[in-house]
Image 1 (tube, rainbow over the protein chains, first blue to last red):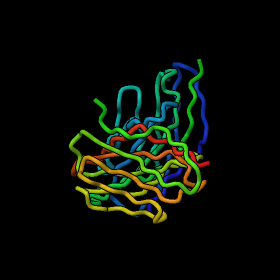
Image 2: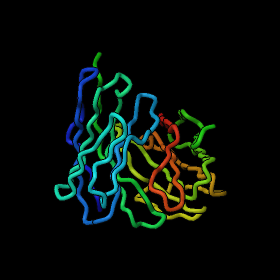
Image 3: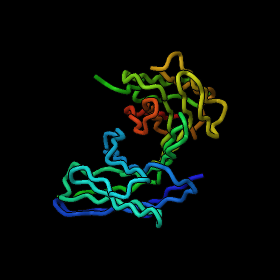
Image 4: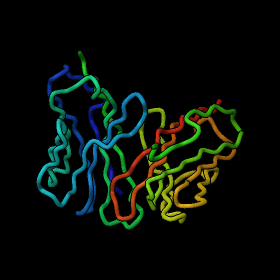
Length: 117
Length: 112
């Protein structure tokens, strides 16, 4: 079974600054995906960024980037130039790659990020 | 157009009642899921259906019964509601062979 750990329940950052959210995971799988999802106060789950474990290059999506360390089983999210709209709960999630149609997400406990004006 | 929709968005009911939550996706996806988010915001998979066939059934009380009349719909029926069933329930879908899951807006269930 896989586990995902987010050790920072809450974080805050000043607008326009950079913040890094931590995530570690435990798995015996070698092929998998990692994700960061954002849940703003509206409750909607929004995919922020994904990383395929077989790719060494860290994923980047505009102001969002990850630091993927496969050997350390670490997957942190960096948000640059933080904006007020980034205020949300951020979830790290794991999915086995070769699981047929049973592609379930295993989530961490979340980090509540508040961007301060 | 809404990709994954759920009805209702809010549901308040008494303990012991039976209720249903409906989910529909218009993305043409083959796989649909139900997740439960508890009061501490922890999200956990409950069920997964692929082309109307149950694929994943995590340790969920048998008071919860998913129903998939076709691959665009996955409804969740809950019998004999208990206080501990209070949570936000999310429906999601993904395409065949795809890894990205698209979530509905969630249904907040409150059992009194």
